[in-house]
Length: 278
Image (cartoon, rainbow, N blue to C red):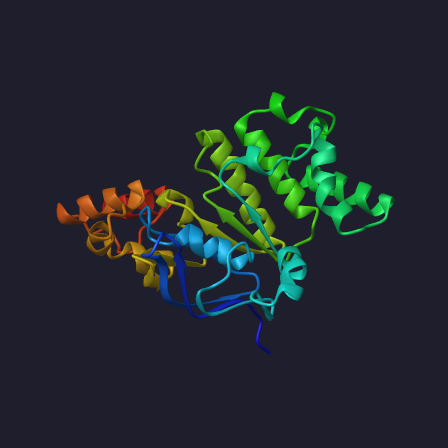
């Protein structure tokens, strides 16, 4: 049984710019299985955010085909079903908030699905509890911190019961505490079966991903597990990408002659490796 939820087949996309269109994606083919946690990284202009918008039918491919849960995004009859199956959380939570009270904002999506009031109430309460924001349900969003606003945005998405959520640089505007909270929620959702696609430029955030896709100049240039991707520090530097601090430190210790295993990604793994050297 094929459990592919996202499939891009030879997809290209160009932005119109006078007589000279700008190609943002160039012949990209990707498959993502249900329940995966896939990170997409790349320098600015690599095409990763354009790719995100194609997954939600906010943009349509210039060439090729995008399938979401088996539905072709180029068919306008599929648009509503696609956005229900694959929701998005953007960088700035203020851009996704539509109401002046937290619980009303979370209810907006289910209301647009035409659900009965008692079902909407249940979904709003469950979603706010899932992101640890139930006690703020009567608050005004503008009174909340950036991290709290992002949690409310995620609650609004969860209330739609999507199979897949695309987080497009959703931690970029948050402080460290807000980033940590948002990451915990992402992994909790993934543990519960939601497919997570996380676009970020913070390499420390993706060491626990199932798979990393590296974009460069509109193409997929690398793909693999975190251990496979971060083992090639020099290759990432050539793409103007960094590595997690732990990986950089492990590389320096290895260059200094210490027997640190390749693929060391976490502080705990590094401490264990150093303790074994005694």
